[in-house]
Length: 234
Image 1: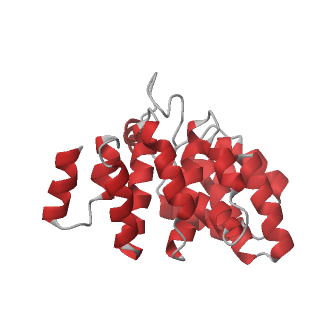
Image 2: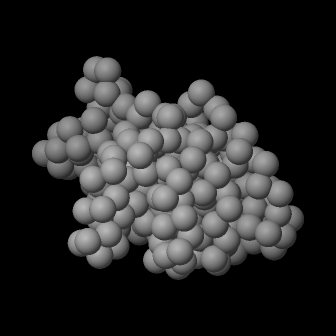
């Protein structure tokens, strides 16, 4: 069975020392955001190599099986396969992959899994369409769906569409988790790279209320004088 072959491919390359490091890096301890996640100790390039061998023949049903796997790298492989299928598909296939992705999004249950897939699938599909699915994800009680909502807007930012990014960044000012603050700040920073006036307008309205880490990420590419001015107001 293909899924078993893929899992065996990963397990043959496991690196316990690196796995131990990754479990600390991705905060898998009790009470941390990645609690209970398991690692084999593979790198992203190693995962991409597996993707390259199997993505064309694998089905969505088989990808779903991989997404249920307890090992982080195998779930990453499944998501990268989805990205490949989305990018190679026609409109009907892209819609199918998008629907599947959103339905199974909670299995992208760490920040790297979200960041490597959300804008390439959800953001790409929704660009130029109704953005309601992103607002729905942002209103979820699930941390990873919330992060996916804001990260997905990266696709629009690259195309100079900022409204959804700015709306969600404003919503997430009141969020309690720094993983959301960092993502929102990152997307604000990327907005500023495309349209610095849009970033200044947002900061002028909201910098006094923004969590410090969100603000720090947002102003990272501004001049030293501008950074100091905004950070002083926080």
